[in-house]
Picture (cartoon, rainbow, N blue to C red):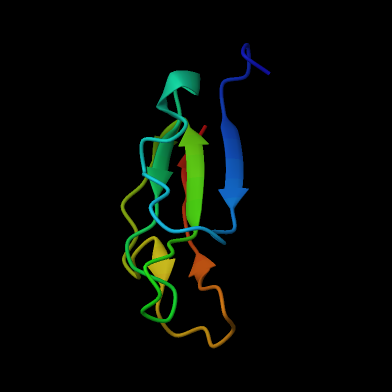
Length: 76
């Protein structure tokens, strides 16, 4: 896994205060931008690779379940 060029891990935040830098030791950056239903919990995509800007944001606001959808396009 350490030799991979692109690595993506989705984190379903069931705990508060998971930092976007939580997996930085694995050379991964967290993308998630707002709390799930005002709970202070944020769902993250942790990505190793180049991530394009998202026109709809990395955390998609219009989904209705407990956890919001995540959006991230990775450049290979």
